[in-house]
Length: 347
Image (cartoon, rainbow, N blue to C red; front, side, top):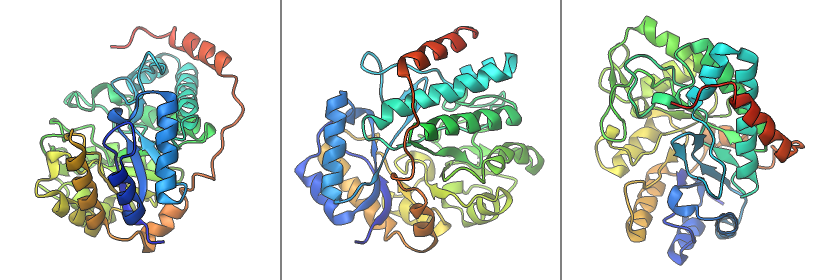
Protein backbone atom coordinates (compact mmCIF):
# COMPACT_ATOMS: atom_id res chain seq x y z
CA UNK A 1 0.00 0.00 0.00
CA UNK A 2 1.42 3.37 -1.06
CA UNK A 3 0.80 6.09 1.52
CA UNK A 4 0.70 9.76 0.53
CA UNK A 5 2.93 12.14 2.48
CA UNK A 6 0.09 14.35 3.64
CA UNK A 7 -2.48 15.06 6.33
CA UNK A 8 -5.85 16.21 5.03
CA UNK A 9 -9.06 17.38 6.68
CA UNK A 10 -12.71 16.50 6.17
CA UNK A 11 -15.64 18.70 5.23
CA UNK A 12 -17.97 18.02 8.14
CA UNK A 13 -19.21 15.73 10.90
CA UNK A 14 -19.77 12.71 8.64
CA UNK A 15 -17.48 11.08 6.12
CA UNK A 16 -19.03 11.69 2.71
CA UNK A 17 -18.92 8.86 0.14
CA UNK A 18 -16.65 10.87 -2.16
CA UNK A 19 -14.30 11.59 0.76
CA UNK A 20 -14.20 7.89 1.64
CA UNK A 21 -13.28 7.19 -1.98
CA UNK A 22 -10.50 9.76 -1.79
CA UNK A 23 -9.12 8.21 1.40
CA UNK A 24 -9.11 4.73 -0.13
CA UNK A 25 -7.37 5.90 -3.30
CA UNK A 26 -4.95 8.57 -2.02
CA UNK A 27 -4.12 7.00 1.36
CA UNK A 28 -3.07 10.20 3.20
CA UNK A 29 -0.74 9.45 6.11
CA UNK A 30 -3.10 11.14 8.56
CA UNK A 31 -6.34 13.08 8.90
CA UNK A 32 -6.92 16.26 10.91
CA UNK A 33 -10.27 17.16 12.45
CA UNK A 34 -11.35 20.77 12.25
CA UNK A 35 -14.14 22.34 14.30
CA UNK A 36 -16.65 21.60 11.54
CA UNK A 37 -16.08 17.88 12.16
CA UNK A 38 -16.53 17.99 15.94
CA UNK A 39 -20.13 17.99 17.20
CA UNK A 40 -20.36 15.30 19.87
CA UNK A 41 -18.42 12.43 21.38
CA UNK A 42 -20.32 9.65 19.64
CA UNK A 43 -20.29 11.54 16.35
CA UNK A 44 -16.48 11.92 16.42
CA UNK A 45 -16.01 8.28 17.38
CA UNK A 46 -18.16 7.24 14.41
CA UNK A 47 -16.27 9.60 12.10
CA UNK A 48 -12.87 8.29 13.21
CA UNK A 49 -14.08 4.72 12.73
CA UNK A 50 -15.29 5.56 9.23
CA UNK A 51 -11.91 7.12 8.37
CA UNK A 52 -10.03 4.01 9.50
CA UNK A 53 -12.44 1.79 7.57
CA UNK A 54 -11.98 3.81 4.39
CA UNK A 55 -8.20 3.77 4.73
CA UNK A 56 -8.09 0.10 5.69
CA UNK A 57 -5.60 0.88 8.45
CA UNK A 58 -5.25 2.68 11.77
CA UNK A 59 -3.96 6.11 10.78
CA UNK A 60 -3.07 8.97 13.07
CA UNK A 61 -5.99 11.32 13.69
CA UNK A 62 -4.84 14.89 14.43
CA UNK A 63 -6.51 17.88 16.02
CA UNK A 64 -5.59 21.38 17.25
CA UNK A 65 -6.40 21.34 20.95
CA UNK A 66 -3.91 23.73 22.54
CA UNK A 67 -6.28 25.27 25.06
CA UNK A 68 -7.36 28.90 25.16
CA UNK A 69 -8.66 30.21 21.84
CA UNK A 70 -7.18 27.38 19.77
CA UNK A 71 -9.47 24.47 20.62
CA UNK A 72 -11.62 22.39 18.28
CA UNK A 73 -13.38 20.70 21.22
CA UNK A 74 -15.28 23.29 23.24
CA UNK A 75 -17.76 23.64 26.10
CA UNK A 76 -20.40 22.68 26.95
CA UNK A 77 -19.52 19.19 25.67
CA UNK A 78 -15.81 19.34 26.48
CA UNK A 79 -13.92 21.15 29.25
CA UNK A 80 -12.17 24.45 28.55
CA UNK A 81 -8.42 24.50 29.11
CA UNK A 82 -6.26 27.60 29.59
CA UNK A 83 -3.98 29.20 27.04
CA UNK A 84 -0.27 28.41 27.35
CA UNK A 85 0.49 31.82 28.88
CA UNK A 86 -1.54 30.89 31.96
CA UNK A 87 0.88 28.07 32.69
CA UNK A 88 3.77 30.41 31.99
CA UNK A 89 2.50 33.03 34.42
CA UNK A 90 2.03 30.40 37.12
CA UNK A 91 5.49 28.97 36.41
CA UNK A 92 7.04 32.43 36.87
CA UNK A 93 5.52 32.61 40.35
CA UNK A 94 5.85 28.95 41.34
CA UNK A 95 7.83 26.75 38.95
CA UNK A 96 6.74 23.47 40.53
CA UNK A 97 3.06 24.39 40.38
CA UNK A 98 3.38 25.68 36.81
CA UNK A 99 4.97 22.46 35.59
CA UNK A 100 2.45 20.32 37.46
CA UNK A 101 -0.49 22.28 36.04
CA UNK A 102 0.88 22.17 32.50
CA UNK A 103 1.52 18.44 32.60
CA UNK A 104 -1.84 17.68 34.20
CA UNK A 105 -3.76 19.98 31.85
CA UNK A 106 -2.27 18.24 28.83
CA UNK A 107 -2.83 14.82 30.42
CA UNK A 108 -6.52 15.73 30.71
CA UNK A 109 -6.60 16.99 27.12
CA UNK A 110 -5.11 13.66 26.08
CA UNK A 111 -7.83 11.86 28.03
CA UNK A 112 -10.47 13.78 26.08
CA UNK A 113 -8.78 13.05 22.75
CA UNK A 114 -7.87 9.40 23.26
CA UNK A 115 -11.45 8.53 24.19
CA UNK A 116 -12.50 9.82 20.76
CA UNK A 117 -9.81 7.96 18.82
CA UNK A 118 -7.74 11.11 18.28
CA UNK A 119 -4.10 10.15 18.67
CA UNK A 120 -2.10 13.30 17.82
CA UNK A 121 -2.40 16.89 19.02
CA UNK A 122 -0.86 19.85 17.19
CA UNK A 123 0.57 21.24 20.43
CA UNK A 124 2.49 22.60 22.25
CA UNK A 125 3.39 26.00 20.81
CA UNK A 126 7.10 26.43 21.60
CA UNK A 127 7.53 29.98 20.27
CA UNK A 128 9.15 32.52 22.58
CA UNK A 129 7.05 35.62 23.16
CA UNK A 130 8.64 39.05 22.64
CA UNK A 131 7.07 42.54 22.93
CA UNK A 132 6.28 42.66 19.21
CA UNK A 133 4.70 39.18 19.02
CA UNK A 134 1.56 39.30 16.89
CA UNK A 135 -1.72 38.33 18.52
CA UNK A 136 -1.91 35.32 16.18
CA UNK A 137 0.64 33.77 18.56
CA UNK A 138 0.16 35.98 21.62
CA UNK A 139 -1.06 34.02 24.64
CA UNK A 140 -0.50 30.75 22.81
CA UNK A 141 3.17 31.14 23.81
CA UNK A 142 4.13 30.00 27.30
CA UNK A 143 6.59 32.74 28.13
CA UNK A 144 9.13 35.33 27.03
CA UNK A 145 11.90 33.26 28.66
CA UNK A 146 13.26 30.42 26.46
CA UNK A 147 14.21 28.31 29.49
CA UNK A 148 10.67 28.54 30.84
CA UNK A 149 9.20 27.68 27.43
CA UNK A 150 11.47 24.65 27.20
CA UNK A 151 10.46 23.37 30.64
CA UNK A 152 6.75 23.88 30.05
CA UNK A 153 6.80 22.42 26.55
CA UNK A 154 8.46 19.32 27.97
CA UNK A 155 5.75 19.07 30.62
CA UNK A 156 3.06 19.43 27.95
CA UNK A 157 4.59 16.62 25.87
CA UNK A 158 4.84 14.47 28.99
CA UNK A 159 1.15 14.97 29.73
CA UNK A 160 0.04 14.18 26.19
CA UNK A 161 2.19 11.07 25.93
CA UNK A 162 1.01 9.81 29.32
CA UNK A 163 -2.49 9.96 27.89
CA UNK A 164 -1.60 8.02 24.74
CA UNK A 165 -1.42 11.03 22.41
CA UNK A 166 1.52 12.29 20.34
CA UNK A 167 2.37 15.98 20.48
CA UNK A 168 3.61 18.20 17.65
CA UNK A 169 6.04 20.99 18.60
CA UNK A 170 5.45 24.19 16.69
CA UNK A 171 6.32 26.47 14.96
CA UNK A 172 9.86 25.43 14.02
CA UNK A 173 12.33 27.06 14.32
CA UNK A 174 10.42 29.84 16.14
CA UNK A 175 7.61 32.21 15.17
CA UNK A 176 7.45 34.39 18.27
CA UNK A 177 8.98 37.41 16.50
CA UNK A 178 6.35 37.46 13.76
CA UNK A 179 4.55 40.80 13.63
CA UNK A 180 1.86 39.79 11.12
CA UNK A 181 -0.53 36.85 10.93
CA UNK A 182 0.78 34.10 8.64
CA UNK A 183 -2.82 33.14 7.83
CA UNK A 184 -2.83 36.26 5.65
CA UNK A 185 0.75 37.52 5.16
CA UNK A 186 4.33 36.24 5.27
CA UNK A 187 6.00 37.41 8.50
CA UNK A 188 9.50 38.76 7.85
CA UNK A 189 11.63 38.72 10.96
CA UNK A 190 14.44 41.31 11.05
CA UNK A 191 16.18 40.07 14.22
CA UNK A 192 19.89 39.28 14.24
CA UNK A 193 21.22 35.74 14.12
CA UNK A 194 22.21 36.08 17.77
CA UNK A 195 18.65 36.96 18.75
CA UNK A 196 17.28 34.12 16.64
CA UNK A 197 19.51 31.59 18.38
CA UNK A 198 17.61 32.44 21.57
CA UNK A 199 14.36 31.38 19.89
CA UNK A 200 15.87 28.32 18.23
CA UNK A 201 17.24 27.09 21.57
CA UNK A 202 13.82 25.84 22.69
CA UNK A 203 13.52 23.49 19.72
CA UNK A 204 17.15 22.41 20.13
CA UNK A 205 16.37 21.51 23.73
CA UNK A 206 13.45 19.36 22.56
CA UNK A 207 15.30 17.74 19.64
CA UNK A 208 15.90 14.43 21.41
CA UNK A 209 12.30 13.89 22.45
CA UNK A 210 9.94 15.56 19.97
CA UNK A 211 8.86 12.94 17.44
CA UNK A 212 6.93 15.47 15.34
CA UNK A 213 7.48 19.13 14.55
CA UNK A 214 5.62 21.73 12.50
CA UNK A 215 7.24 24.46 10.43
CA UNK A 216 6.40 28.13 10.70
CA UNK A 217 5.45 30.13 7.62
CA UNK A 218 7.98 32.84 8.49
CA UNK A 219 11.10 34.31 6.84
CA UNK A 220 14.27 35.47 8.59
CA UNK A 221 16.18 38.35 7.00
CA UNK A 222 19.41 37.38 8.76
CA UNK A 223 19.36 33.86 7.27
CA UNK A 224 17.33 33.43 4.07
CA UNK A 225 15.60 36.76 3.34
CA UNK A 226 12.09 36.58 1.93
CA UNK A 227 11.83 32.78 1.90
CA UNK A 228 9.49 31.08 4.34
CA UNK A 229 10.92 28.23 6.37
CA UNK A 230 8.30 25.82 5.01
CA UNK A 231 9.62 26.13 1.45
CA UNK A 232 13.29 26.85 2.20
CA UNK A 233 15.77 24.00 1.67
CA UNK A 234 18.46 25.98 3.52
CA UNK A 235 16.31 26.69 6.56
CA UNK A 236 15.24 23.09 6.87
CA UNK A 237 18.63 21.49 6.25
CA UNK A 238 20.90 24.04 7.93
CA UNK A 239 18.71 25.25 10.80
CA UNK A 240 16.07 22.64 11.67
CA UNK A 241 18.13 19.56 10.83
CA UNK A 242 21.51 21.23 11.44
CA UNK A 243 21.68 23.83 14.22
CA UNK A 244 18.64 22.57 16.08
CA UNK A 245 19.57 18.95 15.45
CA UNK A 246 16.00 17.74 14.95
CA UNK A 247 15.33 14.38 13.34
CA UNK A 248 11.60 14.64 14.06
CA UNK A 249 8.97 14.06 11.42
CA UNK A 250 8.57 17.54 9.98
CA UNK A 251 5.16 18.65 8.78
CA UNK A 252 4.21 21.96 7.27
CA UNK A 253 1.94 24.42 8.95
CA UNK A 254 -1.40 24.56 7.15
CA UNK A 255 -0.72 25.07 3.46
CA UNK A 256 -4.07 26.81 3.09
CA UNK A 257 -2.62 29.86 4.83
CA UNK A 258 -1.74 32.73 2.52
CA UNK A 259 1.80 33.41 3.74
CA UNK A 260 3.42 31.25 1.07
CA UNK A 261 1.79 32.69 -2.06
CA UNK A 262 1.39 30.74 -5.29
CA UNK A 263 -1.12 28.00 -5.96
CA UNK A 264 -1.85 25.25 -3.47
CA UNK A 265 -0.13 22.71 -5.71
CA UNK A 266 2.98 24.92 -5.95
CA UNK A 267 3.09 25.40 -2.18
CA UNK A 268 2.94 21.68 -1.58
CA UNK A 269 5.55 20.83 -4.19
CA UNK A 270 7.95 23.48 -2.89
CA UNK A 271 7.52 22.29 0.69
CA UNK A 272 8.28 18.69 -0.20
CA UNK A 273 11.27 19.72 -2.30
CA UNK A 274 12.54 21.84 0.58
CA UNK A 275 12.59 18.86 2.93
CA UNK A 276 9.23 18.77 4.70
CA UNK A 277 8.25 15.16 5.33
CA UNK A 278 4.49 15.70 5.44
CA UNK A 279 2.13 18.28 3.93
CA UNK A 280 -0.61 19.49 6.26
CA UNK A 281 -3.75 21.00 4.82
CA UNK A 282 -6.88 22.00 6.72
CA UNK A 283 -9.14 23.76 4.17
CA UNK A 284 -9.92 26.24 6.92
CA UNK A 285 -11.03 28.97 4.52
CA UNK A 286 -13.54 26.79 2.67
CA UNK A 287 -17.10 25.70 3.44
CA UNK A 288 -18.33 23.73 0.43
CA UNK A 289 -17.54 19.98 0.58
CA UNK A 290 -16.74 19.86 -3.13
CA UNK A 291 -14.16 22.63 -2.77
CA UNK A 292 -12.60 20.94 0.25
CA UNK A 293 -12.38 17.62 -1.59
CA UNK A 294 -10.73 19.36 -4.55
CA UNK A 295 -8.05 20.79 -2.30
CA UNK A 296 -7.54 17.40 -0.62
CA UNK A 297 -6.84 15.92 -4.05
CA UNK A 298 -4.40 18.71 -4.91
CA UNK A 299 -2.46 18.19 -1.69
CA UNK A 300 -2.21 14.44 -2.25
CA UNK A 301 -0.88 15.09 -5.75
CA UNK A 302 1.71 17.54 -4.43
CA UNK A 303 2.75 15.24 -1.59
CA UNK A 304 3.63 12.15 -3.55
CA UNK A 305 4.55 8.90 -1.83
CA UNK A 306 5.79 8.70 1.74
CA UNK A 307 9.21 7.14 1.26
CA UNK A 308 12.89 7.42 2.16
CA UNK A 309 13.84 9.45 5.23
CA UNK A 310 10.29 10.74 5.58
CA UNK A 311 8.98 7.18 5.80
CA UNK A 312 11.65 6.30 8.36
CA UNK A 313 10.63 9.20 10.57
CA UNK A 314 6.94 8.45 10.11
CA UNK A 315 7.44 4.84 11.20
CA UNK A 316 8.38 6.09 14.68
CA UNK A 317 5.00 7.78 15.05
CA UNK A 318 2.96 4.63 15.52
CA UNK A 319 -0.45 5.01 17.22
CA UNK A 320 0.07 1.60 18.82
CA UNK A 321 3.25 2.75 20.59
CA UNK A 322 1.52 4.96 23.16
CA UNK A 323 -1.16 3.87 25.60
CA UNK A 324 -2.68 5.87 28.47
CA UNK A 325 -1.45 5.39 32.00
CA UNK A 326 -3.95 5.02 34.83
CA UNK A 327 -5.82 8.21 35.70
CA UNK A 328 -8.59 9.06 38.13
CA UNK A 329 -10.15 11.74 35.96
CA UNK A 330 -12.31 13.24 38.71
CA UNK A 331 -9.41 13.66 41.11
CA UNK A 332 -7.19 14.94 38.30
CA UNK A 333 -9.68 17.66 37.40
CA UNK A 334 -9.98 18.69 41.05
CA UNK A 335 -6.20 18.92 41.39
CA UNK A 336 -5.93 20.82 38.10
CA UNK A 337 -8.50 23.37 39.27
CA UNK A 338 -6.64 23.78 42.56
CA UNK A 339 -3.37 24.44 40.75
CA UNK A 340 -4.95 27.02 38.47
CA UNK A 341 -6.59 28.72 41.45
CA UNK A 342 -3.12 29.94 42.44
CA UNK A 343 -3.05 31.92 39.21
CA UNK A 344 -4.84 35.20 38.34
CA UNK A 345 -7.62 34.87 35.77
CA UNK A 346 -6.56 34.25 32.16
CA UNK A 347 -5.90 37.46 30.29
